[in-house]
Figure 1 (tube, rainbow, N blue to C red):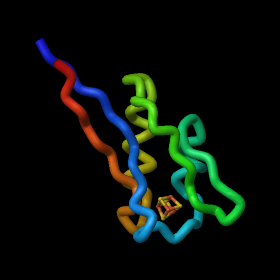
Figure 2 (spheres, rainbow, N blue to C red):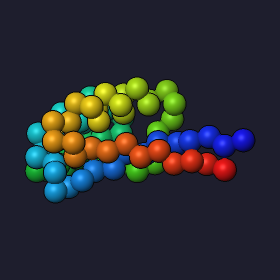
Figure 3 (cartoon, rainbow, N blue to C red):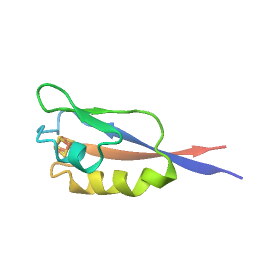
Length: 72
Ligand code: SF4
């Protein structure tokens, strides 16, 4: 049987650094001194997946990406 896990990834070229994602998902996203997100790369537990989805969908430039990995 296989399952999946989710990680967040940032496209730094698309990001305009207004910080909305960090407001919506502070458990895994903080901002650097210039307002660019610092993303915790560790897999997101199921309890936080909804927060991650909200942050990804709120990003106005599609810079925040959700990647699903299949585990064997
Ligand atoms: S919401 Fe999107 S554009 Fe804004 S800081 Fe986060 S990743 Fe960058």
